[in-house]
Every structure is written in structure tokens, then in C-alpha cells.
View (cartoon, rainbow, N blue to C red):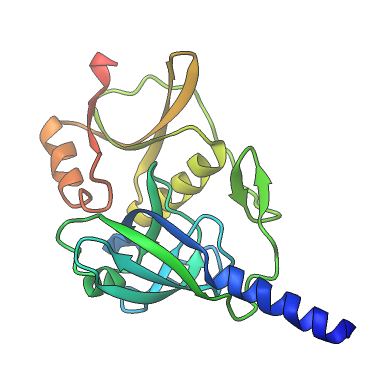
Length: 227
């Protein structure tokens, strides 16, 4: 009898996991991330059907549906992110093409867990101030207060330190540009803006952002002299 109850509990747990759904904005990896290691240790490949999610264990397979055209694709979670406010999943380039939103840059999607994974996610995520991180996550700091000159390319603004650190690490590796963090206070709340550069002219910063608009549609040029 105990075995039957245990099996029923396992079946219920599995069904509950498979029934998990989430909706929100999806984006996709920029070409500059090709070959870089993901948080799971695997290298990102644009032709693979993979994705980044903030909390789902590595190896989880999810069905992503473009709510605009009802196209669907199954992807395997092997990375953490996205690190832009309002995004729920970062897809590989091939997955975005299958959902037919590659030219738009982002899409409203639903996410449904269809397979709880292959055991890669044995280390459970840890919640810190409502942000999910992997255990034993370390970052190297080399910080100095500066007065930048010229122009910068602002990619996003974050509240959580964990998201800020991860995105900074990704940007430094992918674009080989200096990353500057600007601290802002709005209505008593601190925000952290990530800015790449500096660039000597407004046109150079604009040209740099032109290749990143699909990945960071809310990005814009910052004139340091007016900050």
C-alpha cells in the first residue's frame, strides 16, 4: 500500500511539473555569444535548440509558443537569464527562427515544462532576495569610481546585484568592451545601469548599438557630459 501511495505521489509531482506554464517576453542570443560557455558549462551554439531561464534546472525541456502566430518549439534549458527586465526566456538563434520572430527581436510567448530534465540540474537553485542563483557562484571585482568622458551604449537597468554581475560577465566576454555601471536613485530605490564604451563620438556609439538592438531593444546612447 505504501508503494502505491509513493507511486501516486511521484506521478502527481511529475504531472504538476509538466503542467508549469509561464508567459512573458522572449528574446534570443546575439551572434557574439557563439561558442561562449553557458552557466551549465555547455558552449552556446546558435544551431542548437537551447535556452536560458532564471530558475528551471539545467536539462529541463520546455515548449515555447509564440502567442502571435502559435508557432511552437521545444528547447532545453542550459543557461541562466535573461537579464533584461521583463524577459522570461532567452532562446538560441535557431529557436527564434522556428518561432518566426527573428526579425522582431522579441515576442510574447508562453512556456510549458514538458520534461523535467536529464539530471543535469542536481544542484538546486538558491533564493537570495527573490533572485535565483546557483550555489558557489563567485565573481572577481576590480572596481574604481570614475568620471567617464565621451559616449556610452546603455543596454539595460537592473535592481538585483546578481543579475547585474551575471550580465556584466556576459558582456565583457561577448563584446570585449569595458563595462561601466551607473548608480541611479528613483523614488528612493537604487537602480544600476550597464553601459558599454566609452566611444569618442555619438555616431560610433550609435553604430555599435545598431548591431545589438535585436538583443537589447531598449538600449540607447548615453552622453556622459550630460549625466
